[in-house]
Length: 406
Image 1 (cartoon, rainbow, N blue to C red):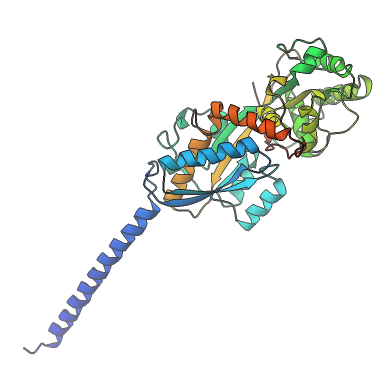
Image 2 (tube, helix red, strand yellow; image 1 turned 45 degrees about the vertical axis):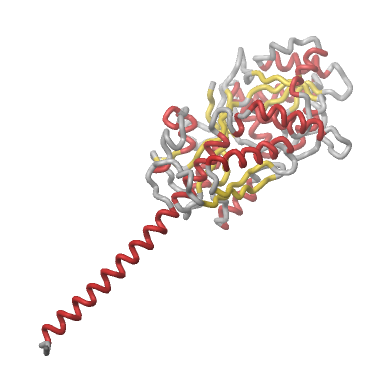
């Protein structure tokens, strides 16, 4: 049969349509497989059968024997729940986050899939453009307890109602003190000082023990010096900046009171060592070897003294931040993990699952206290061997967010 021109055009159009339809079906089938492997941002936890590889920084390094063992154990336990998830954990030695290195990372945009930052790094991290908006991934099912987190913690996770980070700890600073030195100086180790007058008096008694012992230790330079000065200033009700954030406010009666007391303790009482402590790492060897009575810090200070420098856990106590007439305001701070842009939904889900398991689940990860006690004991034994000295790198430097809390 002979087709006219219009019939031939219709046949060509029909054939083309069939080909396009076939191609579309083929493409849709292939795309479905790709989407299944990548996952969907549906607010659900990671499928335990998903196959995915992720990366994360700030894993304990060679200077943290107990922490490194804990982490390896946790990776194995996590694998029992998610057998097809591979975690490439990047270890650190000394400080997890060095500001200059962090800045370089942000400029190069070469962060790990989940990357660490402090509360005070929020603006710099978001300005890098590398942090993913994970609002649609985070809820009480994927992150149990999310809705009941403290407002002060959520404030550091979110901007304009959007979630960008997952917290792994939150703390306030206080008074770290050596219980053994308190006993030797005739002080009650169960009643640490709660005012700065009491701190000064106790420091004088401890320094009187001699043998190179200081009653109190403080930073005197760099951002660590500024951090401690801010803590001491806030404890007396002072401020670093005006309420509108536009002017410095530390040149105040409270600021001068902090500096005068430190001056008197150093030069009149001689309860502060003549050797200045200008670097973060310098503070820890004297604390670990029983040469310092008191020091401001967060609980991670004691953890580092025990697990890394081999100090005796029973030697330390933690009290509230001293104030003018009783416990004072304390700076709050903490650590977060941001999720890097450009990852698949399953990678994001896997990173959230690991962070939740390792840092936020009772009796797991960092909260597996029974296991930590055992491993910390073995680490102390190793740290006291002749091949190791108490001068390893410092714990993660956790800068505080400048807002007082009680």
